[in-house]
Length: 279
Picture 1 (cartoon, one colour):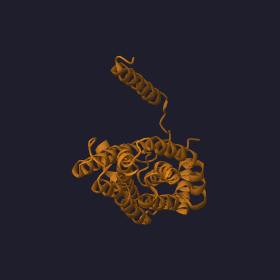
Picture 2 (picture 1 turned 90 degrees about the vertical axis):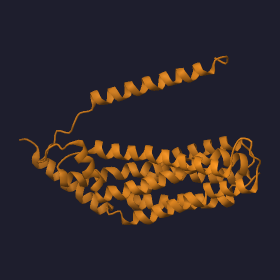
Picture 3 (picture 1 turned 45 degrees about the horizontal axis):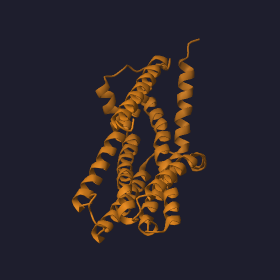
Picture 4 (picture 1 turned 120 degrees about the horizontal axis):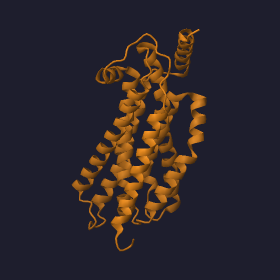
């Protein structure tokens, strides 16, 4: 109620918690393990995590994913202050967020087509480069009073964000397939769990770095729009994450799983599973 806004937050928390509990419980009860067992034996979880972290393709994906996520989180954490101090219009924050989210969702089919044409590795590399360019361009495109340019930048960032979220998840199954060749086990849970843990860790690091930087430069609610603050916000939104994404693009060149290799792995697994079926 308007008299007690905390009750709305409490109700939202109860609804979200209930939905999560029901969803997770339903998933656990209805998910069946693959009947294919192969020649391996189940390992302790700590040893399985160690094996996963020694997987070279997974090491590269995890490193690139964490660095890129930190860069994106820094940008997201800074947007509200950029709207207030750089664009001098806090109302533009809503335009930026709505445009970014809409473009992110609408662009997913185009990202899927890019994967089909060039493969997952090169698609991710392209998205990393485009995201780096987008963030670098923010220095020029995000100007006070230039709403059309702000809209264009937000749409560009949204398209890149959609690819940044989608592509690591599509690359992970190829890594899991290669792990199965060696381990004779399907260990989706370990790899997905480690990637999820990396997501949480990078979000915390990104928010922490952004918060430390904003506090260091003195960005507060009472802060006057000083040149020092504006310059710092432009650097924090643009060049710093742009460099991080560019580094990620360079690092990902070493990712070894290309479409031909992924197809050979899939074919090997199909033949192995067919050979192990009873009867």
